Length: 570
Image (cartoon, helix red, strand yellow):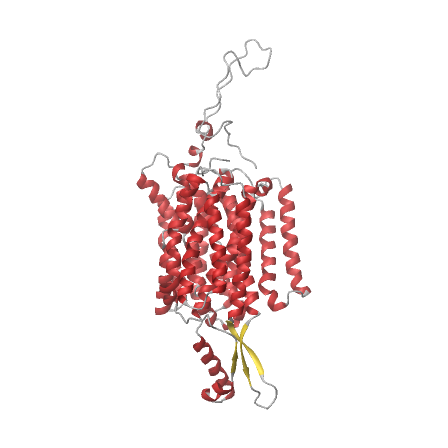
């Protein structure tokens, strides 16, 4: 990795070793060699911790430090904010786009697809041209996407808008790098934990906001709110937050960026459509094979590229690779939990059955009362609570969000005292346990509430620990791309989890059987976007298995066993 900054030879904070009296750096045998010229002054040479070269706010007042932190956190919180608001409204959006059918989940999948493709590029650009500048550019793209989603009547354009919003996925990773560069060292683990879970806008406020907006207007009001949120924060961010001074002199590896983005996209197309196309169909396999081939080519190229996106040797080190692997698996769980619990709770069996009856009545001309006597519904919807989004917030999601607001920063402080591995293990263990509990008990809101509170504890601990582990694992010159690689695996994991969910529940549709008007055999029809209890149960069991893998990886990892330093280890 090209870097023209002069590096100290000692440990951060230590003075260089003194020369032995009488020794000179001149070659042996030189009698009166002239004294060497003093080294050119550089930020890092004068400050071995690298604080001057990044613009760290070590001498600033607490008011200045925490105002910068607050604006960065609120700015980057748009990522979990939009996810928590939009993921709970999937069913309502699907009702306005009936042609989407089972592909309504693409409004979530596309976030991982586009986010995965753009996050490495934006993360690397942040290292090269400045983290503040790239955050600003991402926010403009997000703003444009929010406007498109609020205004469009086309499903295709709606997905375009969601794709533009997905570019903001890099914001959380880049913001973590900006915090590492700007915050005083002693505050870095705590600040990274805070940015992981935010100040409560996404965690606590968004469920009530979503419920209030959709109850009084429609799902489009969510995107109008996101538009206004960014319009207010963009100028504040530009004025209050300074740019980091750390900018690496290196060219962007465009080929590597294209290979990893295209490879992820093709693999996700297969995962999301395999159920509809047939998992074993050759035309479906083309996407899977193509995606894997491009990802292999990406790795091959990175080994040979003169200036790779990220040093492949660093990617292979266990302190990075294990964290990335856990990021993939854990976010499969996180994506599924956000989608499944909200979707299930909003299904109302009476509304579904009446809608089907009215549809048959409109087609056949028979009365609804007559059709209720002859139509046979097949499938258990015992999980259906019939909640509005406001009821969902009051009964479940707000209470799930509260613990994470505290356990995220707590994980950072825990890591500073005892090491980050401990909260990491606890997070994955609790997250896995909640998937087992969801599989066994999801028939009442009280059950979902209690399980979701435990899940919220694990959620905050995971993000607080994972982001800090990357800060500890990579040098500051690669912080943007390092955090972005974590963001890439996390967004890819969320998309894979949602795609697997779609495949599983689509194989377990709620069905209605109607007699033939001509006396022939009865006809069985799948009820669009409604799935049986068995399908959801299998989804949670699958995520429990994924979580178990994460727990094992967290146990065997060597990183995070010593107190966190705020980024001085490497």
